[in-house]
Length: 112
Length: 109
Image (cartoon, rainbow over all chains, first blue to last red; front, top):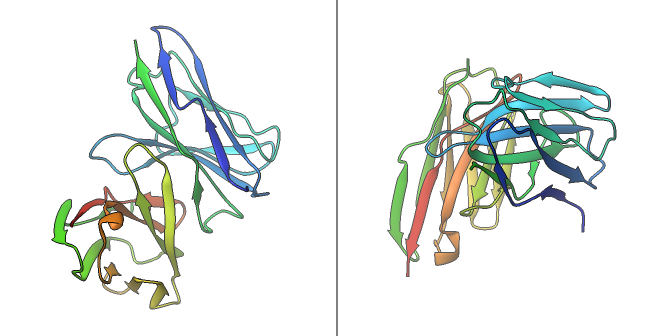
């Protein structure tokens, strides 16, 4: 089945710790995105990548980092600089920027 | 910056009723608009995509319309079913996707 796989489903972070959320797609899409969803708020863009080895900051990139070394993979690292990391994180992809979005099932990140 | 609003935040209807969900946006310079469904604790599933040059799109019991000049879109759901219960989000694309906060729909059997 083609789709987007996010792992883990649940993740807990300790103070001062960096954690990495995985996102893999087998749709052969060029564009990939990371969004953060908080209760009562719309999805907010953290980072996006239109092509391998290139990515751009979204509206709330501070405290996060990404890499795009392979077309199918776009991992997100939540660093210790992100002071309020508790949220539901969603990875998405599209065949090209601005086209139909396909989403993974999300990772819920909580702070211990 | 694009602002996307969805009203009401929550809606309950009896099974079988036709209903309309609303989405409004502040900047009419959009590339497309998408409607999504989200079940609790899950990712988003794309329902319909309307290009800026189109007026509406249909898929089964769903019909989405777009009026760029007024900054509005509606999602019409015909003959609602309990399985339609979910949160429905709209997103507009200009230089990036901007999402509304969603309408939580409950269809009562």
